Amino acid sequence: MTCLLIVALTLCAVLTPSASVDSCDGCLRFASYYGDHMVLQRSPERAVLWGYGPDGGHVTVSLSGPVNQKTSPVPVLEGVWQVTMDPVDAGGPYNVTAATEGSTATLTDVLFGDVWLCGGQSNMGFETYKIFNASDELALVPNYSQVRPFMVALEKSQTELMDLIEVKLPWTVPTAGNVADFSALCWLFGHYMHDILKYPIGLVESCWSGTPVEMWSSTRALQQCGLAQSTEEKAFPSVTDSVLWNSMIHPLLNMTIKGAIWYQGESNADLNQDEYNCSFPAMIDDWRMAFHQGSGGQTAADFPFGFVQLSTYLKTSTSDAFPNIRWHQTADVGFVPNPRMPRTFMAVALDLPDEFSPYHTIHPRYKRDIAYRLSLGARAVAYNETDVHFLGPFPNQTLCSGMHVNITYDQAVSVTPSSHVFEICCSANQAPCGPKSLWVPAPITNWGLTTVQLSTSLCSPTEEAAAVRYAWRDWPCDYKACPIYSLSGILPGPPFISNCHQGNN
Image (cartoon, rainbow, N blue to C red):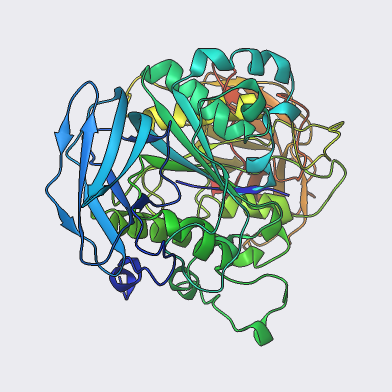
């Protein structure tokens, strides 16, 4: 299924480097995720570098390139050293040299830009060669030499690690060959951001197919939602809490990053579905706190976090599993950012089904559309562009009166008539409605610039509409054919469920 993305209790003690995790027997070297061709975080943040060296020695790190810089010596403690560079503007290339008595280690062709972590399940790991028109995208790769990919290897750990067990793809100059096997969504996001920003972008892929959020969350985060359990207590013994957080996220915490994007949730349609409205926001909060502390305050404490709202799976399904997860991905608000999930952004993807995907319908090949929608959110939330429209239409008023439901949206809408994508819950006594209530179709009968009117004719004469929901299906519409979009037709309205307020419009 989908893949993971890369980007106080006892955390400070956990993050203190210790050579007991990964020793190099006194040789001077950088930690596993530093290398030639890498991207370090640009100013105003300060890049953090660390590695291994001889006990009792002192390490100096120097930067040579468009500007030169040299740090004060730092001691090697228990075989590990760490420095924080002064801020460096976007650009390069640079050589970065760590030096101790009689030994040096140098990274070449290093760029400074923005570093984004890409995590989740298989839809994040879905490779570029599999998308629609992949050859066209791969032909463009030489134009994006400053977008640099890095891939964490798939490894698990029962304890929090300081360094990666293994690297699958070291930092590299992109080629059609290595991008073909890299995350399509991660790469395309970097492609779109480079088009706008015109400076280097570093992409760190850390994801694993078929994994639930619990495996990517620390015990600390899971405890906030009552989900930290022993193996004996688990309904799904094969799911081991925190094992990917320990091995594929925790080692990265010392690195300064700009933000993270995430595509996951399919596996939680079957595991702790009702708790996802807690577990997903809690994971985001915990990652933010951990990266901020691990980088010595350089990664923002509220770094921007983008995610993909689930696309589709089974066309004829009547299960509420995917609709529920979509709703829980927003902490049951319906849109982000919101007060529970500040500085987040979301790409709605329920209108991008891929019925004939050779990789199964749960893996749509429309990653280009998803990456573009994510890039709009990043521009608005991460880069504070005020003129970027990134949110699809969402209701700010729902009124029920007699034979109609009148919905007022927060923006102008483009409407396509539909007889079934809107639904209403009919009630004789205004009892609360929920997913298990009886819902009937509510055809669109009229619409205006910001309004949509629905018919309540399928309620019995003794009932009134008590609630309305939109696109509450695993597969609510065909490709880019949902009823509600922004006036431009680019951004779909997200699914929602809302009680009906009685009155005249």
